[in-house]
Image (cartoon, rainbow over all chains, first blue to last red; front, side):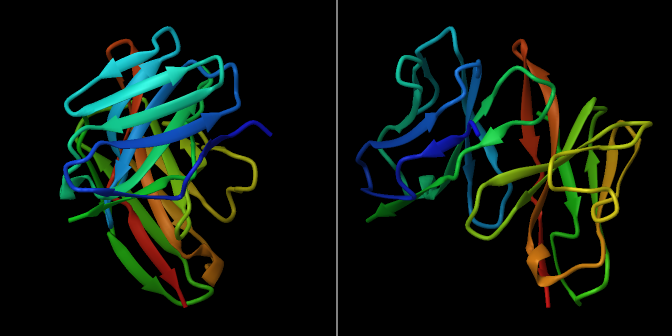
Length: 112
Length: 116
């Protein structure tokens, strides 16, 4: 069936570098996408979202890019810090009344 | 965003017993959901907790195994019944909050359940 997935389960970056976490989705009807951050022992925390009528949205140190042509979503974190270490999930919503469909998650590891 | 309190935060239970997880929100919300996150996995929606009516379950989840209550707009419970080791997971309560023209999901801190 249609699903949301991620290219890499683990991403290791040097502190201070930029991180790029990727996500592929297959539901062409999805019109809303969210990135969540889940630190160890905690629930997912909303980071940033984007609607399908946009291709880029910026927050504080984070940018989400959406490429609807290839059904690809990415999260860019600038100047990665130790506190960014977490599992990052993309999620998509197809416009129904149900909850979100989550991708598998990428574990971001920060090297000192 | 809503403040979501979930308890217990963790528990270790014996096979065959049941555990009820509580979710309290600091404001009235229309949409409340229960998710399961198995070890090292992503989140899977169990059901939508409907206020004043029976919960709506996703494929693979049934009311007898995961009974849900939603007595009002700020509170819900999820019971994991007749537990087995396969039920060892994190169970997460989430609420939908309408912000900036879109329903956004916010999560509690989860209940880490281990079944022996």
